[in-house]
Image (tube, rainbow, N blue to C red; front, top):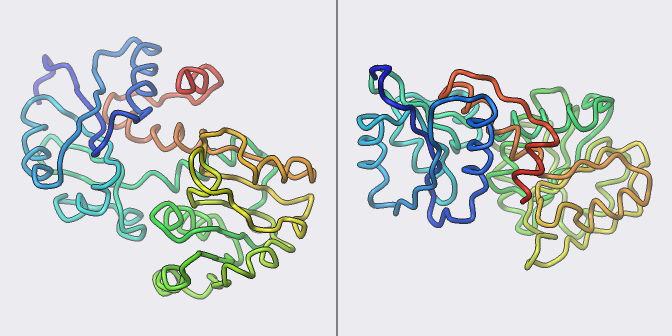
Length: 277
């Protein structure tokens, strides 16, 4: 790509109008005074591959990928990072100068960075983690928790089979717990994560009994609409350290932006405010 082209990036999904990524990347482009644009693109599944092959030719340096294309892009990409392979999904594509498409997953990175920034005293190795849910987000969370040294992950999901599958992929530090026993699983847990959509505006509440929570536990919810879910509200009342899910969205965007635009961006209060507008 010649340097006289303005670097373009964006997010591809279907639907994609609700995405906060354009606001997020747009803020960084303005803040650092960088040339470039980041746009939402609604691309149907049957046009995904041809779109991805075309974009690098017209000045795109990369894109984020969201639902429903995060698994499909793995087959289209020429190179796939180890962490994307492990998670089974990609959310960040880098279009290399040689024309090759490199797929990565930064969700686990964003999840851990958010915890480290928001709760600097968190010690992942200090005890078991509980993860509610076994979907794509859970896979990213589990992979990253194992990587930072959590000794055991108690995984619980409404359909047990999905949790069993995840254990087969990630090994014996994963203990599958029946959904009806989820309340017992939180006892003695050092880290508690909701990766389901339960508690989100318009969805059912996460009804897991939380009286077994330790005051020393770190509790985080990937849901960020509302910012304070019932899980976080109850945990805060019990004296736990609580981290909302917005930070994960912000931090997962950092590696892509850095690769595309050549500047490592900062996640701060100003960025939170922009994305919440």
